[in-house]
Length: 359
Image (cartoon, rainbow, N blue to C red; front, side):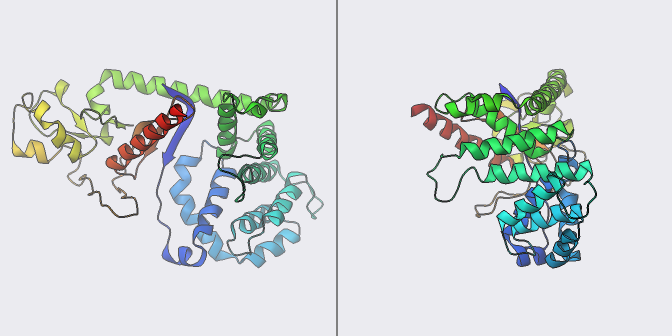
């Protein structure tokens, strides 16, 4: 059974060459901070790709020193932006302590303008502080798997403060969901300390999100039950599902509509042909090599053996259930990864889950 609230999404967006040349991996950190801390979780999926372009434009529009000068003059929005640039190293020399100082000023209304920061900006600052403390739970010199439980708690407190002010960002949900998992691990009694249980606002947000996910799952299960062949890849052992009917490719043969299978890829269609052939009345070559789809341009791009993950650009959203090492499973959803890559990820997760059980 899929654990409520544990849904992963893989989305790819184009980063222009100039941005990557100037900032490299620092832009990924910059984007992660703004995307996970300065938007409600309800906005995150719809705005991901457009935000990449907007963030690139923002970095080009003003230098780090311009943002820093504005922050020093008392602009709380630029105080948050200065912190994000300092934390990531985009346009300013990386300095995580200074970054947190700027966020604390806004969160605690201590910036120099003399007027209170709007609540909208205060919660963004609190969310950034939660992100920072969560990142600091492990340090480069720490042993693998060793976490600073005090840093975890500070992250949870900032997340709880965010929710108390009516703001639930992606990082708030990530922190709450992970801590709830840790509470169930017998080897980590520190996570069950009363101080964690007292974060009522955070747990209310996690419970509410779990209910949303469960409700969405029930709604989807009802749709799938009405037309199972339209939502689940028919190839044995594949397990990939389409979030919509149009996400999978239907057989182009003359098989009856109620028995017409759908596939995540041509690879799966060919693998399933021996089983489906007796049903597919047409039995034509086209039925094997040309899965039906709303447009003829929906061919799946080939999977290469390059180091970079092969990406699709057809926009079809599919998902796969992946085992979670802590128990249960996670639905991974993507519009860009090839079906073959998704199955490889599942296989790797299954291996790790078995290794964990053997310990």
